[in-house]
Length: 138
Image 1 (spheres, rainbow, N blue to C red):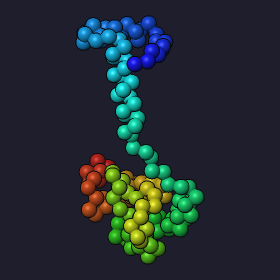
Image 2 (image 1 turned 135 degrees about the horizontal axis):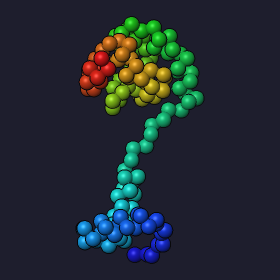
Image 3 (image 1 turned 180 degrees about the horizontal axis):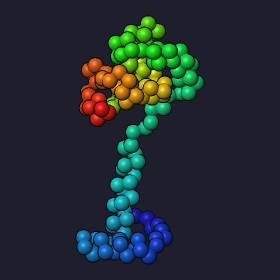
């Protein structure tokens, strides 16, 4: 192990000592465990799958009328399909995919979140696992 000096406020040190006494641990042990947990959390965190704005902006323009004027899920999927795209479930939301099945961006990147479309169509995307979102929005 290597020695590292950190500066903590009196209140924090007092709290760490109290925890240490209750759990029969040293302050150093508590701090090392906290740092270990934080490092693990940070290395296991999902990376954001941000779409490239240079790609999304033209798509937003291309699909704007389809997204704005679709009357329901089937109509929206038909409109997108004519242009070579499809909305699919992605976690608790939607993602736009191309005809080959490659993920392009999130539906919200296009300005239309899953929640917004559920409210507009008064129904969840057929087959979407998060159907409960529809009942929460009523």
